[in-house]
Length: 278
Image (cartoon, rainbow, N blue to C red; front, side):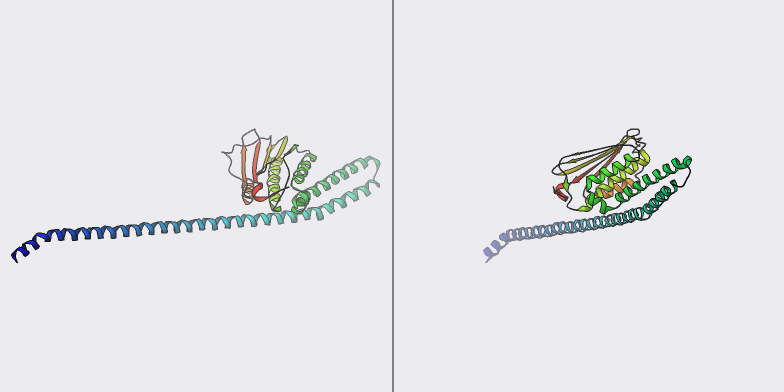
């Protein structure tokens, strides 16, 4: 009996050590499980947080695009309305004035017939310009004429008014726009550039180049006017409009200028994404 008790006392530290070992292993296991759960929870939380942030960004982008699209549609409707007003009302008034002058020319003395004839000629030219301008403002007319021909017509109008010389070049095959609005938007960007060149650049020439590739339509427009310092001039509404319009059709837009070196813009339109080649 004493021998047994002695043996038991001798073995007890070993049992205690084994129990501590198992307890330690158990605690380590629990700690690993808790750590793993915390890490998994953190990862899931971060993924959910990132997803919510991305969803919010996408919603904001979609909202901004919808606003920009709505603004563009409103602008198009406004331009179309102005174009119709010019053609129907102003055009009719000028046509009536021209007819009246022609009737008056037959009734006046010879010494003022030339002056009446000159006035009639000016009115006829004005009538022609009003009609051409009304066409360039009406998106339906632009679609009927086609993208390139609309650009050429606008350049011809500028040249006919003796505002500056014009140059147009086109390389590669033409495209059929899958979305007709894309053609309108591209034309409006170029139209705004041409309008700004006429009003502000004091340029002698404006040039537009279209370069069609399989993947991209690259549009470059430039003038040889006074230019400006891009660092010193804030972004105006014209530049913002052109940039926003390009973004609507997944295109990149850039503008470069230096004092006395004119202004140049470049548009890269992704044909493969948005059009069917023709």
